[in-house]
Image (cartoon, rainbow, N blue to C red; front, side, top):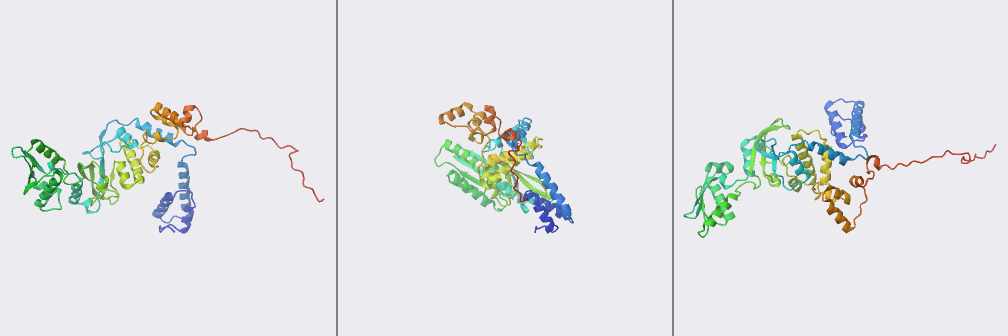
Length: 413
């Protein structure tokens, strides 16, 4: 028996007999539960309609789904903007959109041109601005120029840092003592630069071991690169208040410039179930290949939707994502990935670097069985899909003659 109160055993038996996926059966149960008082006959009509619709939407046998998907994505791609940067949702953060972003995805680039994360918060971190800012400062890379003024005394060979008390208390909201924060900063400088520091309140001074103008300037440059708090890859975080559809309320959402997905998930207050990154490889490393597949689908669909091309059927994008991830890792659609690893010599040669593929195949004595579409088109044979996959032969059927008729059974009469 199902967990639904208004679904009887008779109704359940009718639905379970239908040739549809489990997901659709659960949707039918939820529909019956919401309407209440649905009779078995009515439930059977609903299940029958769902089954008919499901079978109508399935791909016909021998349909060239790869070619159709390529055309369905490629044609709208010709209408996309070539602008690399576009404000996507958050006016303060530039994100690669349009055709360059689509190329990034199908090429499976290791690092996007404009990596970013959308970070959702949980509990009081999502509703209280002060708690949300705790997550912001735990995530955004804090460098020395954001904490105070840096000056260089060439005569005394000393670098002087005047820390701003208000900034320190803002960036370390859980620490009340400014001296504690200043001491932590001084220790970080000592560990990173290998120098001794002198601290007086919020003033920190240090210099090279031996007088050297060149070494003094090197210390100043190295000081600028030290990350005192946050994630080094995250250069900026924007906080916005948005509607939460699940709770019908509002919540704070963080958008980052730069991406370090694994480090972000480990921060207290981050909702790991909803937080995402536009770097599909980071999602693959942290959440696995299935999550990476979903990310490819979502990112591609969002890119098309941003350009007003959301009429592309998601199943075409799902096929592309399946092909890119079906070996357990992310592969690009190109000569260094899927197209370059095909078994057919002619299919590889038809994509790119034709002469190299043909020469290598000749040197190694490779054979082409002409199983795919591309190679059969090249040699002028019917492709093995659609009607080309059917072997139909004509022959004559002779009518039986009297001599072929069986002899009558002997009778006792």
